[in-house]
Length: 157
Image (cartoon, rainbow, N blue to C red):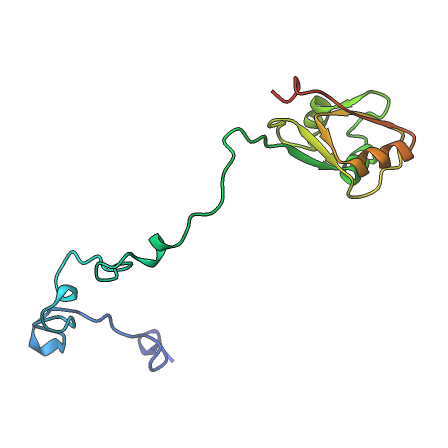
């Protein structure tokens, strides 16, 4: 076998259809658009049009609402906090606040505050101070002998 004898498998490649290139091409004259009518002309936009009847997408009611002043919290799980404590990235003796969590690399940014959730286990006796926390997270930290305080809205601004 030589380089000039290399061929693709039969039927593996298909030539592009060259529309409107004369009668010999098989798609000359009308170019596969049929005869007359809106679709045979350029600038056609039919998609949702229903012949003047109110289209389905306009007949159906609008749903949902996006709250304009919604607060977005960064979420942290207790299991991850414990993992970072074990790796020595978070100091247990000091109060673990939002700045400490960002400095350790556990979260990228505070957003409108940090919310602690109870996924995973915490075994260290820690003092955590954050913007929000789930009830189960507060209980889990208390069970481990620590305290989890939720700060006021001043930190969330």
